[in-house]
Image (cartoon, one colour):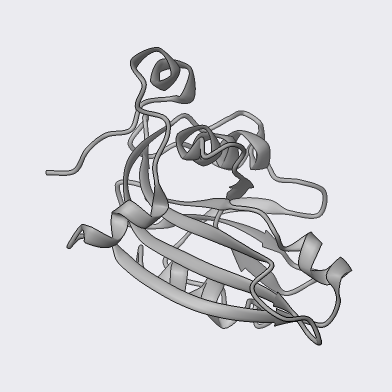
Length: 183
């Protein structure tokens, strides 16, 4: 049985909104990946130096909610930057930020993956920062919400998919692997 993580406004009142990503290493039901990324310069590093919550929302048919940019041939799960370790708000914000028009209410069920990245800058000594991405499993409050009226950020559309669309061939391998965890 998985723990349910309440909406961020509910979580604030009961103190369940903060998660220590490194503490999830001990959970058998959460994968933990560690990598080091060397950035070409400090500007590139600073654009990638934040924690991220990624959410895999699946419907009753087992399809996953993806946002697709047809011009860029890219598809991905909703995500949001996380501020001050508030992973639950980040998870809910991923849906709220990406879904405009008719929103999709979700229940964040459980974390399934932590990706810990140590960031270095080429030519400089040592790790400059450590960031985490937590991939959460989530479900819509309605069993099969209609996404036809949901639009994402500019140039992105939402839909239910049984995998990465064939025409989204520019989707990075790690993003495609995250999608496959849900379908």
